[in-house]
Length: 237
Ligand SMILES: O=c1ccn([C@@H]2O[C@H](COP(=O)(O)O)[C@@H](O)[C@H]2O)c(=O)[nH]1
Image (cartoon, rainbow, N blue to C red; front, side, top):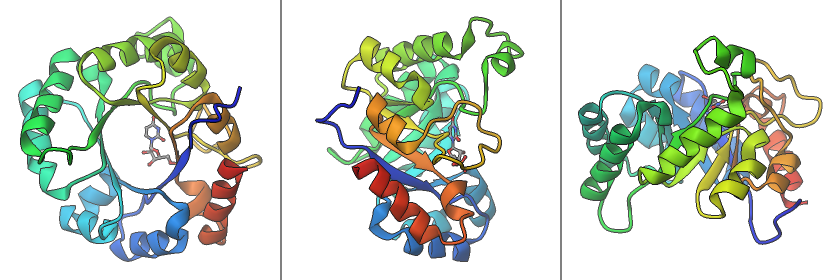
C-alpha cells in the first residue's frame, strides 16, 4: 500500500577508497541523490578530512555503524561532531545503554537543531534467517528487527536501518515517526551481490521507506548519472 504523504529520498553509497572516485560519483549523481553516504571503507582508507571534502557541504550520511561500550561510543560521537553529519549510524545490538550514551553525546556536542539523526542498524541486509541463526538468533530476521527496533526507539534513537522487507511491519508497530532507511535495494534485474533481503526502489517506497540506500547498482553502472536518475525517477513515479 503506497503512503501518499511520504516522500522517499535516494542516498547514494560512495563505497570506494579513492577520494577522486568518490568526488566523481558525487558529481555524477547530482541532485538525484538527496544525501551522500560515506562509510567505513572510505573513512578508513582516505581519512575524515576526505569525508568532509567529498561531502563538500552536501547532506552527509556518515555510516560508521558504531558498536562498542557506551563510554567509547559516546566519546566517538563527540569526536565526530565537527563533521556535522545529517545522519549517523550505530548498531542496535550494542544495547540500550550504548544507544542512550550516543543520544546524550549528540544532544551535548551538537549545537541546538544541528544534531544528526541517529539511526540504529537492526539486522544487516546481507543476512537471511539462516545466517542470522548462526549468530544465535533463531526466530528470524523479522522478529529480531522488530525487537531491536523497539529497543532503539525506547533508547532515544531517531530511526532504523532495516531491509525494505520489514518496512510494513515496522510502520504498523512503530508508527510514522521513526526514520526508516533501507539498503539492500536492487532495481529490477540488478545483481543482488552479497545482499540477501532486497526489494526494488518502488517496492521500498510503497512499503514506507523514508530513504533508500543504493551503492553498486549506481556506482558500478556504465553510466552512474543515468542509473541514479533512473532510480530517482522510479521513486517519483
Ligand atoms: O544493513 C545494512 C546496512 C548498511 N548497508 C550499507 O548500504 C550500502 C549498500 O550498498 P550496495 O552496493 O547497494 O549493496 C553499503 O554501503 C553498505 O555498507 C547495507 O548494505 N546493509
